[in-house]
Image (tube, rainbow, N blue to C red; front, side):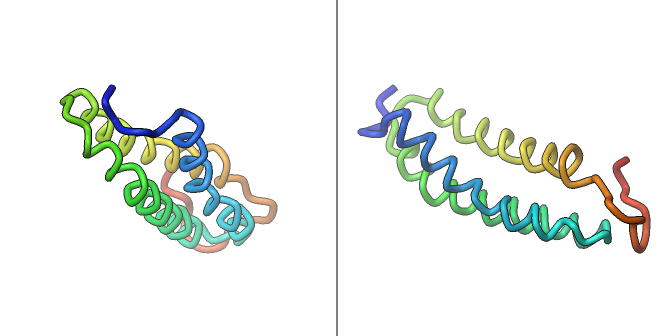
Length: 106
């Protein structure tokens, strides 16, 4: 697609490194306070997104084809969807009774 010298393996490796931030967040999400969990997921989303943007955007921005530019938008939406799915499906389980106001998303 004229994106330069990036291979699929390098793209998957960069995405994997960008997802590393979710490991400490998963450990910190044992805190039974819903607002703290939302903040942790938001911070992880921003850190991971910044890492991915800093490493992927310069490579994709060098492409001349307009469909490649749409990939940037698609990746941003996909990244937000992954973070929201992590919060709803993985970080919403409570071992003990939750403390504070109820979680806005059941």
